[in-house]
Length: 184
Image (cartoon, rainbow, N blue to C red; front, side, top):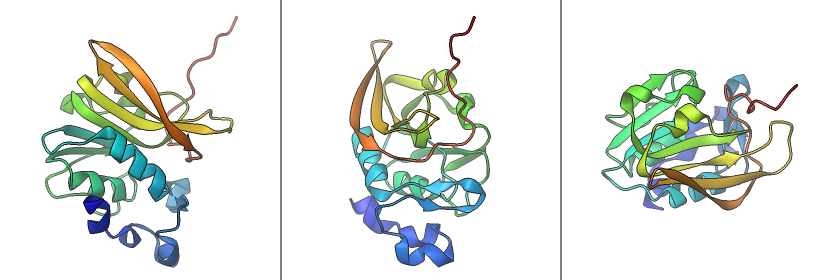
C-alpha cells in the first residue's frame, strides 16, 4: 500500500484523463494501449509477494506506472515494452525495448514476472525465464473476448503450478499471439 500511495497515478495518464486516474477502470493510452485498473494491478502486485532482493521483470508497461510501483518494492527491476516508457519507471531500473512474448533472456532468471495486461496464454519463452521458486502474475483471457482470470504461476521443483486470484476484464497486451491451435 505504501508503494501505491507514493506513486501519483495521475502523472502516468494523459492530461485529459487525470480526473479519472483513480477510477477503478482501465484508462486508454496512445496507440491502443491501456493503463490497467488499479484494483487488478494491486491484486497482481500483492500476490507476487515482491521482496527487496527479488529480480523482477515488469512487461507491458507503456506509461511506466506499474514499474514505478514495483521499483519501490525491489532493488532489481527490469522493464520490457515494445516502446520506451513515457515516464522513467524507477531509479536504477533496466529499461528494455522489445517484444513482450520474448521476455528478457539476458537478464533472466527472474524471481517475479509481472505481465501488466491480459494474455491469451503465457509465452513459453517468458515462463522459461522464471527462477525456481519464482512467481509470474498476469491476467489470462481468450483473445476473442470473454472473462479473464488474474492468476499466479509458481515454479516449484521445476514444475509450474497455477492458482486463480480473481476475475478481471483487463485489455490484451500487444504482441502476444494466441496459442497455436490444433489443425489437420
